[in-house]
Length: 432
Image (cartoon, rainbow, N blue to C red; front, side, top):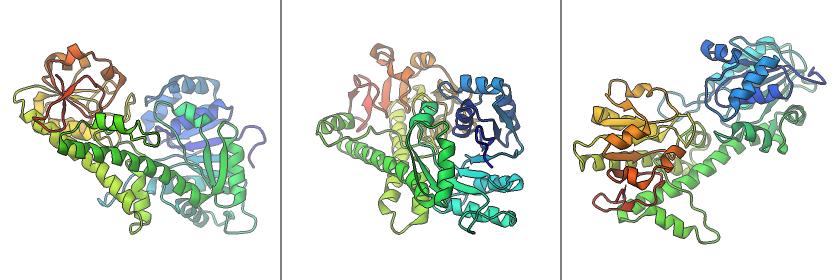
């Protein structure tokens, strides 16, 4: 049974969500064991260090490790509460099929140490029905325990509770944001609610597991659809020789219009992935959600084509690609359109390409053999005649006009409003 004071907690997955979650839980005083399959990650955390970039996470982890409330292991440990925060990528079938094998592998490990009174909470973003499928898997592995929804007196509780956090503000938002807690039964939801109230200050709203699963997917599909409108508008503006930034600025003066800013696509493991889980579950009905995903993916190829045209118009010029992360001021490159565009240009233009990414120590593996190099921003400004802005890192925003006036600029993020639009290459924002 969960201890009345401080339950033992086991967190599966020590990545961008799992590690901050484990650290926040540990800071509330609960003993936490974080589980990860990578030994180097485990060793790093047990030294009180971190392997990812996140504001204030280093101090929180170091403090929890020193107090003895946080440790890491590659082996599952018995606990009162199990939190599963492992990846849910696409299957390798080319059809955007969700791969829940990491979730099911973690559930299998939990089943081996599960006891009556324990609570299992799935936090990974999943297709609708995954929590019940996980319950059924555990039921088959542990017939000695009654699972929720399969008997009148269940021995364990199982719930789904996704995070709602923004990279760069994860610790703050893990604590302050509202949470949707979906139980397989109402009792499961109440058990999970009692756990989250130990460290969440936002409102925790209980529902059923399937509704909580869909809620998480809908939140990111909504954001994806809004971004798709901006990205499609930017491609229309290119075709018509318009400055999309000016059009959006003026349109947003309408009291009920709030168009987002376009970019080179959409990245990250949430917005670029989760809408496909809805499409997979309802392919005939999810027409607009599918279209939004296709628009945002197409924007990457649109940007790549525009960048190539600009480079070909400036033969011999060195090329500076500014940014690889999927959003500003973080070190997360998952599903990043900036990474895709820069790597594609590196493969084609080789040693002419320099990449500036202040949050990377080395270029990702797809740059190997291309001849492209990682440089700092000052080197790029001094040596590159073509600058392609792919990420709106703060360090790029503050570059004054005189330091980039000699270069031709393709600004996919609209960070340099003093640049003038020329129409020799339609729609490109070029330095004057």
